[in-house]
Amino acid sequence: MFKNSKRKKVLFSLLALSLITASFFLQPVLVKNALLQEMKHLGFSPAKIATSETSGSRAIFSDIQLDGNGFSTIDNIVVLGGIWGVKSATVDNLVLTGEMKGWNFPDISGWELPKSGLSLGKMTALELSGGQLDLLTPEGAIRLSSKAQMNLQPDGSQKINAIIWCKQNQLGLDTRWDVAVNPDDKTWSAAVDVREGRIDFKEFGASRISGWINIDGKKKSALPLLSGQIAAGQIRIGEHTLLANANLTIDSSNDVYHIILQGEITPYKNMHLTADITGLPTAPAVQVAIESDNLTDMINFISTLQKDMQKARGGDSFLTSLLITPGNLSRIEKEVKRTRYDSLELSVTGSPYDLVGKVVARREKNGAIQRHIISLDPG
Image (cartoon, rainbow, N blue to C red; front, side, top):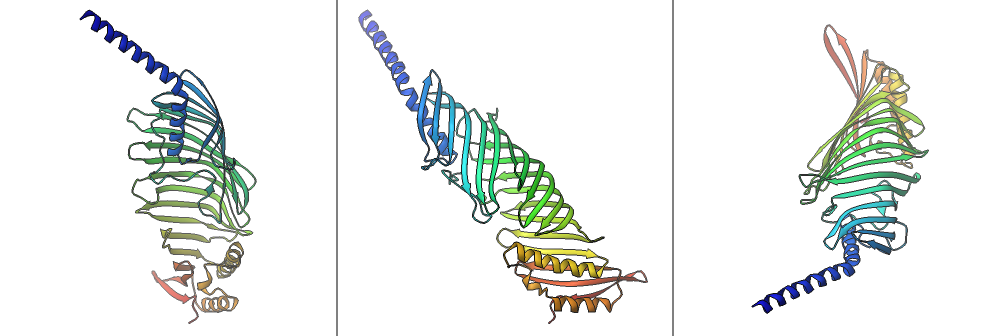
């Protein structure tokens, strides 16, 4: 009996020693495989690690290619973990390279949105000490820089605090992101603080941008839910400033976005714009009201806007259906001048390339509002 007990102890000791020895030699391979799996969860499935160095539970992986061409890379990833996987990681100098064709979602080399949604796996901590996204766009090369930190919360969610900024001639941006990710159902939400922004593209510009955006990435939604308010000191289309003191409100439900834009039309006095757009992005419906008390200003604005839109869109304009021609504008001007009015409103409704418009001349008489309506369609 004593001999059997002694043999069991020896066997258990040998087994434990074997496991320890195996884990010592296999740990670098297991940690590397676990890291590649975590990267796959983030959409980087073709990643290749050139060199690695392991010391206890700490491993350093260097010269990482996220694509097959070396356009998207990582200098180093320092990992804390073991044979059971990656516990935490620090990413140093992440460089992503992509291209935007038109103004569609960018195509990033080496990255593809996972069909199951983004996930940070089971990591308890992740730090991005430096990252950049280099995009080739219709406005030239644009570089976005970022830093981020993720920590596991008591409820099992992963909280991310990030800074994303850009300092270039055509784009200036300073934003703060608070993101929560649920690893179990792969839903996520984000609160974005737009502290400062500036856009100076060839045919579109905006200055003194600020505001907030809330994003809710529901599992069963094709598009994230959005809500937010953005203010801009000026908005430019083409060579002319369109709006001053502009405010944009956005909300959404059931994969449909709703936008309201308001502002003062410059350089005209007492001219205001309100645009209400629903049904985005698949079937937009437009309601626009432009109010003024000066007929000449309104005619000049309509004519200038048509030319700027055509120039911005390479000769094309979704205002074509409004029949904004010199002859038609002259007709409208003559009809309005035959009436007495206190205020004018240009009302436009419909969908892009299928818009209808009218000018409403209002006059108050004996406590009642009289309206004279002139269609933009001469027929």
